[in-house]
Length: 244
Length: 307
Image 1 (cartoon, rainbow over the protein chains, first blue to last red):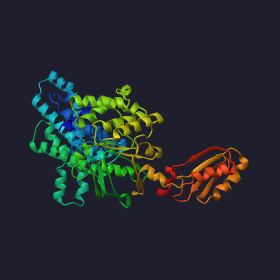
Image 2 (tube, helix red, strand yellow):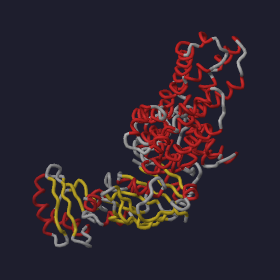
Image 3 (cartoon, one colour):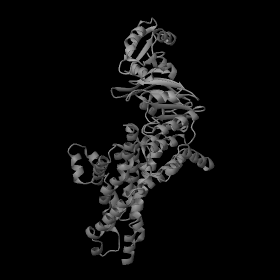
Image 4 (cartoon, helix red, strand yellow):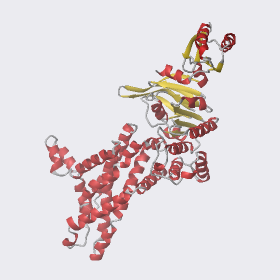
């Protein structure tokens, strides 16, 4: 446990050692605001809630989360520091988890910095703050699932650009798993049970309730399992090709 | 204490390391030699637990690297090839990170950090980020990281690569200083290094151990072992001296370089020819600039074994 914290701390400090972190946070905040106010019609709706804000999070994450996760392992492999890390007395698990938690904590910081919009909505009206807190929690949970996918894609390659593109593609597939774009690809050949299974994997469907502040245990469990699955996959991929 | 048994690593059809077995104990500095791509780094990576062997085992201080990886890694200080580190970190932050993962605490942690920083002369760069350092400094940060927890076993993959002659000397002095109580494996392709620091050398070629001997034992295998080379002062004596040397019964052959009037007489196996050659120069009235007895040339042995 101590080692996980050590790795997380080092990794998180690494984000802020370069301007990348600040640029990322700035873009995240600008886009979040732009989506909320222009596409979401925050004012026009005339309702004191943050639905237009949270509705766009899946799309925001689709491109921004892979930008965070792409360096997780690709960079370690490229620079060779993975050899240093994994020959220290730490387990592969501690390394995978430690690095993932740092990326997640970084996302949480970016997400927390959207607080002015929460102040705004409280200034303009009297929203249900419990719903807003629950929505933030749901958004963070979904970000974790995106990050776990990104971590796995980053472990597959030494090239950060490739890691980014792979992560966007896989995240996009999971996002739209419940929609015709993805389902039609399966309907042609797969049995109905598989098509239903794929449809139930959709991030969008699972986030829909969460974004309205409804913490359904099944949705929470879904994202937790998605994280676990892709982190385990990360460890397997690393074990297989860490030295290549 | 390091021991490997039939260590083998295959990549698809390529066998990078083939049946490598050796043991090394405290007080030994084992030099790992071989041409590039011979399997030195792959062997070291397997011993350090970074790559799993296809076959065979390796253990550090009795801890099998696959069955008890954490115990084995605790006993090991490892400098990977190229001395990788986290470039955006400062030297001090990086070493503190390693200290934390090595489980160093309190006063020990402070004194070990101070020790490696001063021992590798990193005082002036502790606040600098590693990316901004020269190659020599980065290598020294890598060595500092490896010896931070004072491990009983050290594996250093090309520890002096990229260092200038003074720094090389410093690192060799450091290795010699630690050699008494530690087991040290050093890979290198600099042959003079083997003579400077190693008590034993393993030459590896195409994944296999082709020689395992002391540096003296290896140089004794050279054709030049006990050869006598001399340089004449007068050009007119050259061909006479050449013929006379070649006529000596103990001399196997003579290598000549007319440009600098140098003659090297190679002895018959097991023969000592210094006395005979000296006598000959007196007899023939040869005027010499230099006369030297060669102990053997490691580079020549290296080439003949690995080619």
